[in-house]
Length: 191
Image (cartoon, rainbow, N blue to C red; front, side, top):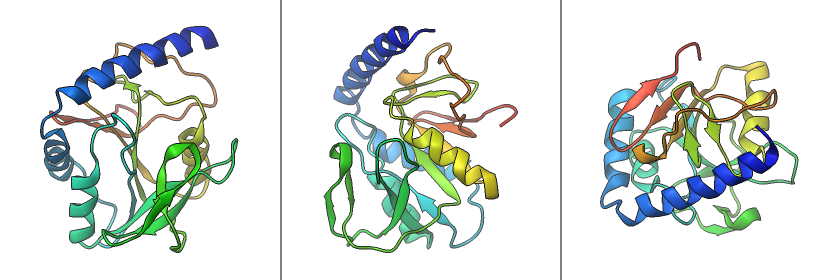
């Protein structure tokens, strides 16, 4: 698939997600419940990265709040520089957020954390665990770097309607281990 084809797929996926968001209702609470029923956390107190929803992404805030209440160390991603892996900063419900790179809200002044479980955003996903991101490769680089020294659990989260038959991927793309939506969760075979 060419870069032009990927660009067209991103545009279609973004339009589809906007439609799903308009019809979402309590999808964030449903996502939280499916996630907590389905995903085994690495260990008590493990570091878990989420993301602050941007625009029409599925609302991860109910999940983040509950993960924090359960005693896990939560963190949010920070874009350091284009072409680099993400860093993660500690987050609690009382953490002050500030605008960061690419319009993402990030913890203002908190320590860095290395996550053991990553909740990963996406535009589209397939049953093989491939995700279509926004084109910057931040999560691909981050997962590759983390997987060099550890086995973090990567969980893509989205609306169920964001599933596509196949996501184009190349050598630099990283699969997720699980997909969780407001309707269901599935472990990726071979991940």
